[in-house]
Image (cartoon, rainbow, N blue to C red; front, side):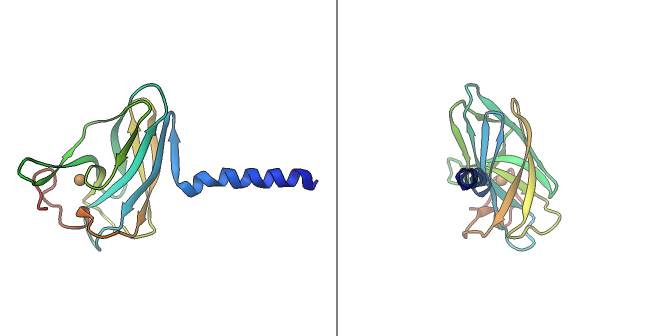
Length: 165
Ligand SMILES: [Cu+2]
């Protein structure tokens, strides 16, 4: 009996790993570590980050993001020719075949605005990401300790236009 018990235990350990890694699969896509750096208390905005890997042979596209905490959009941060940081809503984000697209500070992000209830460290925020091919997938963004200086923790009222650095 012991002979069988050991491989079984090993199997349990192996299958437990994806939960620790906090990732999600939808068709050919793997969405890894969706997270939100905890915004300042009573902040009305927050940014969400993750990576999306496409292991398939065809491009997919992220078409939208939706959550219950407030208005939710897909944004791209960039710095314009005058050195001003701007953000623009992205109607779609290509996830090319065989590539990984990072949503990270200073680049692509999920933008939460007009947040209705406080978002605190330890919270899990369900967000439904809708892809052209993989369809809708709901993932939980973990609210984590902010490592300081997240642009979304400050006033963001001029969103969509030029913002202060
Ligand atoms: Cu934004």
